[in-house]
Image: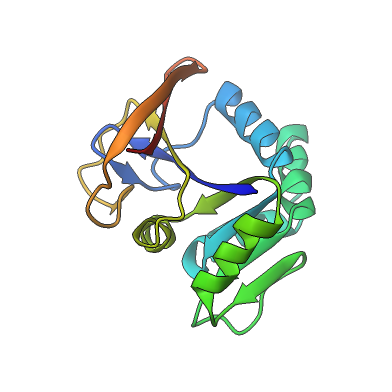
Length: 176
């Protein structure tokens, strides 16, 4: 049985914004290894469009960026969207029967499936399908943006805390 895990970089005041802060070298290496080990990823439409950046090589990329892109491209992706009409390579559009598809993924797959995007995570939280939450706290205060939790925070129990790189703490929670 697969586990659905929602994890994102966030500011100390609870916001996620990929344009406001980027992972340092150690955290980027962590993300490469993490993505390489996934059984797949589930995206909302907006987050998937952001991640499509990794679909085509860019001349300015260093070896690590190319390595991340290769890992991202190789994994299966499911994109929950009513607005998109198509998705890229190795991706499946989920426009109908979202709950049934997500329950099917959990039942039929093995390993960890990443959940990307606060709105999508909230929908899966409401359905009781998120198995773990990972908050990668950066020492940044944004004061605005998209909150990590798109709705009321579910009751959680701390499972672990880990230091990653020079300045990031990963807090891992499970539903209480």
